[in-house]
Length: 247
Ligand code: SF4
Ligand code: SF4
Image 1 (cartoon, rainbow, N blue to C red):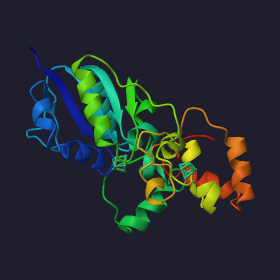
Image 2 (image 1 turned 90 degrees about the vertical axis):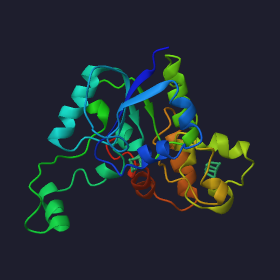
Image 3 (image 1 turned 90 degrees about the horizontal axis):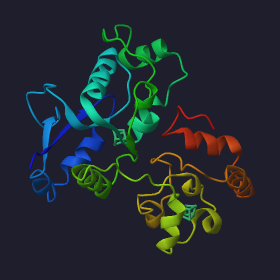
């Protein structure tokens, strides 16, 4: 049987999503019986784009001209292009300073002799190319990555999650940090799939998986106001992982 040809690329990002995939040490050998990584610069050399791919998994956002070229080339060569992780889907932490003076930011980081490399405000993949599916998360859960690869072997794209972190949090019978402990938790607005990892450890949801498709923002803001959290505080927190999203 022909193996699935997969490309895995990293754009502007921390590489955490690719690392999560490499951390699936127990499952990868089995998957590699059916999948071949033909382009995966973080793990394989030489890193050459060759031929066509059944799927390209792309981590990170676009912020440099060579990333634009790479992404367009991957799009041309791939049947499916999948945004991997919150940076690729929403812009993520790399886009946090979008809207500020970029030249000033460069000087603050690199001094008066900044690196001679052209950059622009980081953008999610879908601002440039058609994206066939998205797996959000910072990074995505290992199970999601394995399901994604197993689904691709069957020719299927991942089913989008459409429920909030609160659903999984309640299923785990956690106390609600927001209603019962007056701690600002973004769970009602944020995409589930993480198993409510943070609230289960008494850490409020910070929104790293991006926004759930439908939420009752008005009611949530009213509840937050009752708990002493102003609208601006909530929106700033919500923007941390998806700064390019207009709310
Ligand atoms: S989504 Fe998170 S883990 Fe993945 S590359 Fe971006 S910052 Fe890193
Ligand atoms: S702790 Fe957070 S995620 Fe859990 S139910 Fe309350 S608001 Fe939702």
